[in-house]
Length: 165
Image 1 (tube, one colour):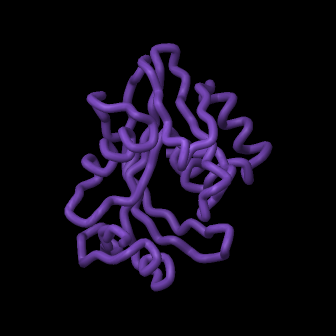
Image 2: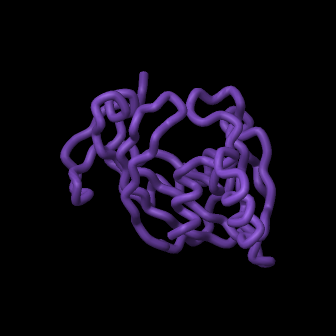
């Protein structure tokens, strides 16, 4: 059974909930928590989405991200996703900012989202979810920006938009 995610209005006020599929098919605006994890060298942790995923397989993405589930706020979703996807917990998350996005998926569907971006510092072990992630690496942010300009299709649009924030 699918978890319900939070649906919001154009001002990011909660108006209900439903499945991801409902949000995508009906154009419901929903919430995403996104995380940038930096090490003490200033490098950003990024991951390649598993080829087994239906949504944007094989593309590079930010450290962790995910939908805000019903009953969660952005911060709780960010903490949950960071632990689920990267095995990182107990780090302080700092809010960077929020932005709205209409993301067109590979299947042509427009996903309407409010995105809250957080950042954290972590120099410890990373135990990524092998079901969702095929590989991880630490990158220089300036090199990453250059790669995004040269090969934007290698990255998720949400990640590109987050880097621009």
